[in-house]
Amino acid sequence: MKALILLILSGITLTVNAQKLKILSGDVVSLRGQTSLILKMDYSEMKFYNENIDEKTYLDRRQKEISSNKGEEESKLWLEDWEYYEKTSFPKKFIDSWSKNSTLAVEEDGSAPYTLVVKTVWIYPGWFAAVMKQPAKVSTLLKIVETANPSQVVLEIESTKAPGDISFVGVPNNNDRMAEGYAKTAKSVAKMIGRKL
Image (cartoon, rainbow, N blue to C red; front, side, top):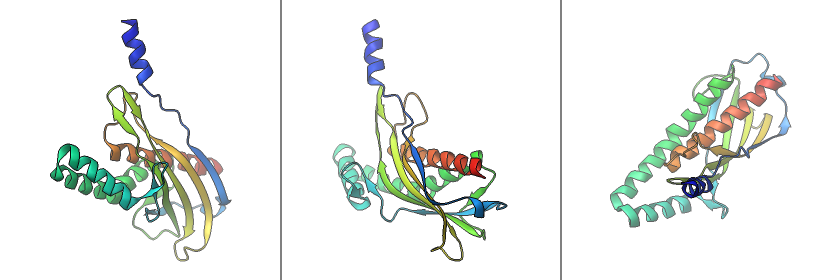
């Protein structure tokens, strides 16, 4: 019995919060008195894994893996799921988590004077295998810019390796793990800005 417990415990990778936040430029002064920010997600240059492959290569690789294991139809369904997560679930997770941790609202539409641009830099999707797991990690560059003049950056924050995991057991779906990485990013950055405000 002891051997079984030790085997299970040795197989479980505990999530260590390795996320790092760093203010690269600017400050929160301009945000004082503001009630909301417009959210813009930017996936245009994101890379995956330690190989730093681009999104197209990542998608092609995943589709081939799924096709060979589960068939072409499952591969197509996975791609549709990915597109839904990128367009809908990732921003929603970010907004929901931010809202729980800040009085400064973020919304995808609106007329706020400032826009929060969340540029995804790098993602490690993680993995899940019964008693073993590896959480996703999401690295982003967050810029708060003037909505009317996006070249005017008032605050720039680097978030590195935000963990995407919500339970001791693990999250089986890759996309869900990545979504949790965005939620963790939002929580940490919202709290950081709140403390400085």
